Each structure stands twice: as structure tokens, then as C-alpha cells.
Amino acid sequence: MARKFKLPAEPGTTPKNIRFPNYVIDQVEEAIRGTKISFSAFVIEATKVALENLREEEEGQE
Image (cartoon, rainbow, N blue to C red; front, side, top):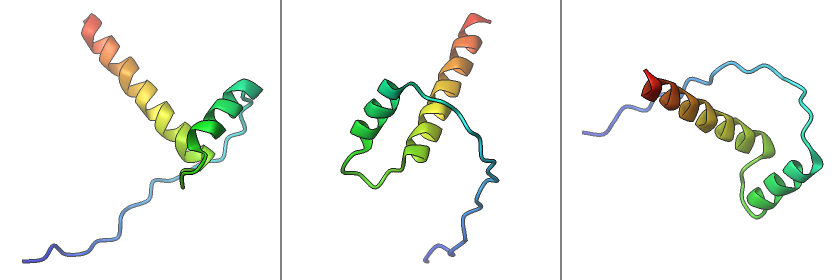
């Protein structure tokens, strides 16, 4: 039996203005060049991974 199609829930978003050092912008743009990944998507995913790593480190210290 086929799975039922469901529209994915989109999380809410809030625009934030942040300043990046130019060398970081250059490195991100180089990393995403030739892909369909946007700068924002890259930064969001990198932030999520960093937060997960911090959480794991905190749990390991308990």
C-alpha cells in the first residue's frame, strides 16, 4: 500500500541581520558554489549542527 501524501509543515522563520567576516562569506560561497544550496540554508544547517554538538558536549559533562 502506498504512503499517503502529506504536505510538510514549514517552521516559522524570522529575518535576522548578522554580519559575517568577509573571509567567512568567501568560504561559504566557495563551499556552496555549483550546488542548489543557498547561503541561508547553509548557515541554518551549520548552526543546527553546532547547537547539536554543544548539546552533546553538555550531556557528556553531566
